Amino acid sequence: MPEGPEVETIRRGLELVLVGQSIASYEVFFANSFLCEESLVDRVVLGSKIVHVSRRGKILMVSLSSEYTLLFHLKMTGQIVLVKGDGERFAGGHPTESMAADLPDKSTRAVFRLASDDVIFFNDQRKFGWIKLLPNSDVANESLMSRLGPEVNSPVFSVTYLKSQLERHGGAPVKAVILDQSVVAGIGNIYADESLHLARIHPAKPAGLLKSAEMLRLHASIKEIMALGIEYGGTSFSHYVNSLGGRGDYLAHARVFRRQGQLCVRCGAVIQKIRVAGRGTHICPKCQKLDE
DNA sequence: CACTTGACCTGTCCGC
DNA sequence: TGCGGACAGGTCAAGT
Image (tube, rainbow, N blue to C red; front, side, top):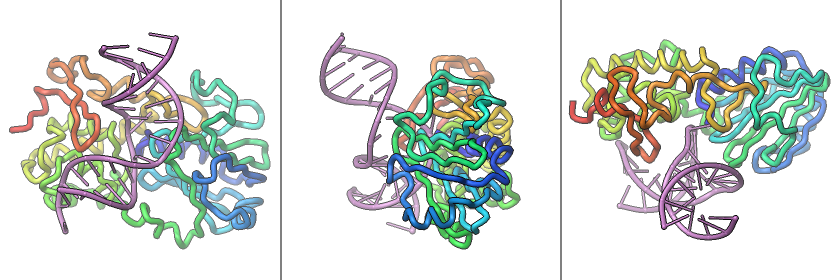
């Protein structure tokens, strides 16, 4: 579920509330979600203060005063929900039906309680997500972290860089290339479809066949769409909620994602859902042609 | 090596 | 209403 913009929205919500707070206790409901020696957690998490909350790609990082960092990956259905001890649970967000139920629930995998009585819930229906506890010096070496490409808003993610990556994976569908976290970090299925539609490129087009003008458009479109995603607070359609339980608004502004059967905002043709690179994919058949 | 497919899990939705 | 199958936003291992 959560792609870069969703994780960034969660990060911003957590940062406002968590920085400076100390962790009083924790509880693990499903061990595989947080594979870590209890004695280490007790030693470097309990009593530690949260120093800052950052993000790399789709990974959320909570840095502690003990020089250790908690890494969170939400995969498809993960949520990090902050419940304020004073009862202002939904402050800053719009409560959803799913969040109206009390936590912990059966999707809750771990809980961190703060000295202030605020509580962080890590929920994950499908159990794909994880929490890792690493010394700061090992964070960059974590297996996924170490292979991540540049952030979309980094100067490293230039037109020249994107061109070189598209050519390097020239035989793969362009959508598969921009979904590859080692090419560029943070793009997932939603924003891949949205970016390709804005750039008027068919997702299945082999990356190596893109014309120079198309690569230019793709680069600009990715930057624009990812910024829009953050501006709207992410995309909600089933599991995603921000850290305060509120929903993201991007879906209301989506160009193609989950809009199959509706009309293209650009040309009025009917949006189709197809399968590309093993993923559900939304396109306008008129704006995004394979053989152009 | 480059690229594709299935597995990991749980829940929901759709057609019969 | 029940049942089987397909599918869901991500990543990794194994396959071709």
